Length: 218
Image (tube, rainbow, N blue to C red; front, side):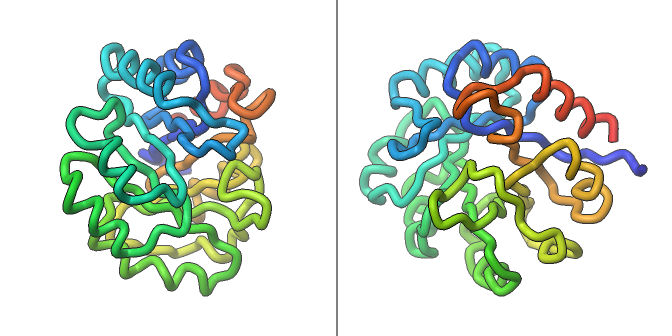
């Protein structure tokens, strides 16, 4: 297999200890969920503490704050100035105007937009967003939740995808699927959450290490 430079994001962290362990393992990005309905929700105070520690000890690791259908004025208020995160990931039904406004008001922070893919046609909605975001994240569609369901997007929808911006694959990422992802789908990054968990927000560090090492060596 040709060696890849695929990036790895571990999402849904809830503790400073695990964030540091996973940064040490070589993750390129760490995500914290700022959605109160999520079982992986972390308060703003704890999130800031985790991200400030990461910024100090592992400044090269991207610090991603995951939000969902948050009022735009609240987003702007919370992320102006010197936020502890350097990426906002929009994981809801945010439209292009929402993305444009964030880009205009908070130009110093990276902006990722997640899209839930149920059918191949869902991919057609993405192109207009590309001028206003820094990366695209494709997640599986689930009627119960916006993310972290552990369900996969059908592989047939993902092959030969091309975007103007880097794109990340999420949804049911497991060591059994990694080979196909790296050789046939070839995203720029892989976003992993529930498949390496003992319980929501609590990662199995050995599983996480095995998955990161497999991706790095592939």
